[in-house]
Amino acid sequence: MPAPSIITVDVEDYFQVEAFAGTVDRATWQDYPSRVEHNTERILHIFDDLNVKATFFILGWVAEHYPALVRRIREHGHEVACHSYWHRLVYKLTPDDFREDTLRAKHAIEQAAGVAIYGYRAPSFSITRQSTWALEILAQLGFVYDSSIFPVRHDLYGYPDAHRGPFRVETARGAIVEFPMATFRLPAGPNLPVAGGGYLRIFPRWYTRAGVRSAWREGLPVVSYIHSWELDAEQPRIHAPLKSRLRHYTNLRKTQRRLRELLALGEFTSFRDSGILHFRSTSTLAEAVSR
Image (cartoon, rainbow, N blue to C red; front, side, top):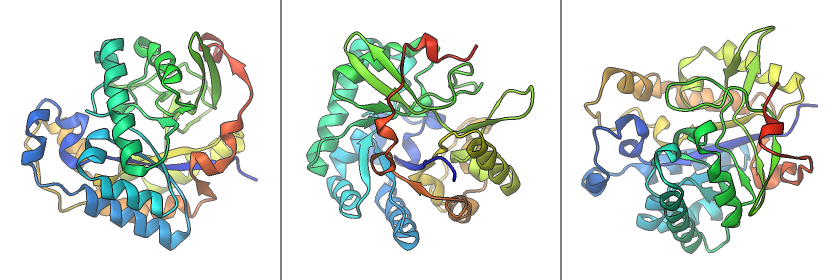
């Protein structure tokens, strides 16, 4: 029986992503035609069709401007969680800036949803070795779990020697459970990312199947993700550096089919409904780093 596996959605608009942060000023966000409601509704329809419940990490800015969307997510039976307010990389913020951003997002999402939220995901998985201080702030603010650490090497994110399975971190302000993003490993090889975002869109289907099954054989929960804009092949094109455009636009037309194929591999659910939030092993972050 595979370990419990999690499907998550990062709810943000196409112009709010890190790939376009150097091109699109946050002060102009309201000038862009929004597609986040339509795109999230498409995901809700897929999940309803497959009887899947998910965790939706919602940008605070989106919750503040589209509170009805947050309510619809909750009404469909999904878990609502936090994806920051301004979608800024954590390791580029000061602790005070991070605390302020997170509090603003938490308030906006809870006001829209009408329920308390307990989960957090950093923009672009930007809790790295340089920004683990953020876990203490999250615990202080009442978050129960985080899903921001990606145990891979990447030019924007990554904590390649972090533990690949869930671990509980004790901080001076309380404990928080970390659920790293899904990876698998070839013999004597590095950690390989799988089952989410661009990795799901761009890599071949056999890679996703092999990686997910490999993680399950190790007894690891597969924490997977999709962005709401990734189902939108008709979204406006933004003039940005070539690498950013390749990452953002490649295979958008395949996302819906790839998502359905991923969910057909096994049982996927939300963090809330999975039971793995009761993970009881405790460690310091240093102890959770692979030797």
